[in-house]
Amino acid sequence: MKFLAGACVCLLAGLVAQTPRRTELVDGAVLLHDLQVLSADDMEGRQADTPGGARARAYVASRFKAAGLTPTGTSFEAPFTFMSGNRGGGAPVERHGVNVIGAIKGTQRADRYLVVSAHYDHLGAGNGQVYNGADDNASGTAALFAIATYFSAHRPAHSIIVVAFDAEESGRRGSRAFVQQPPVDVTSIVANVNLDMIGRDPNDKLFVVGTLLNPFLKPMLQAVIEKAPVKLLFGHDDPSQAGVEDWTRDSDHYSFQQAGVPAIYLGVEDFDQHHKATDDYETMTYDFYIRATETSILVVKAFDDHLDEIAARGRGGK
Image 1 (cartoon, helix red, strand yellow):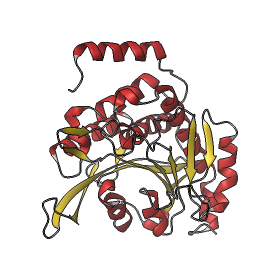
Image 2: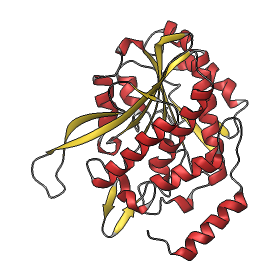
Image 3: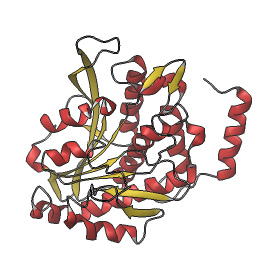
């Protein structure tokens, strides 16, 4: 670990002072513990096809099981291969990734699926530094456990597939593999809610990206905005907006959109820490993260409440 015992004591004292909240939606202490485990140095930055990535994957699978998810096949793990550039130069080499997939069966329309996703991989280690990726994207991955725990206790009307993607940092390889070979009939997948970097924002802002391509989702999300425990804002999906980054293609939701499945992405403007070695657990804004996870649950609930409407509007956001 990179922190000395004294620093760890200070960190724990800081967490106690912030008193992680436990509400009917989220157990804050458990959420922060999962975040801390996933972004620790011994995960070695969680790069795809590395021992650190394998350790992270084992933890994700164990937490999926504990949260009440069941495998969609014989295992939570869904391996895939992809070609990637060689760091030393030369021809691309074959690499191996593994998505982690679980499900909750719906109580009314079990044949319709909402996919809730986050990528668990990050950049790995290099130049004597570990890129722990606390916000990117241990935050989204740990939130999956909280979401699964909530909906296991409060069963959804429609089935929910919860998936932690591998190799997002290598070009959305995990989500691309998923939509090419989904664990259920692709026509039964109605929508995707993707979480990528939801853990650090001193201004309390969480963005929902994707309504420009899927305008019919906006009223459903507007209802969440009015009661969300963070400042939930539409944005970062309009390429014509000057001076504002367009995140339409920046995470795994875009693989679903390309496949014709309406998708949104929840994320923050973490410009200062993005892909930096300083994206560590102790630099997160803990209370915001808890509230962002609560907001994510509200978004998933809104989609479940309206999934038949989303299905009726058809693929492509018309």
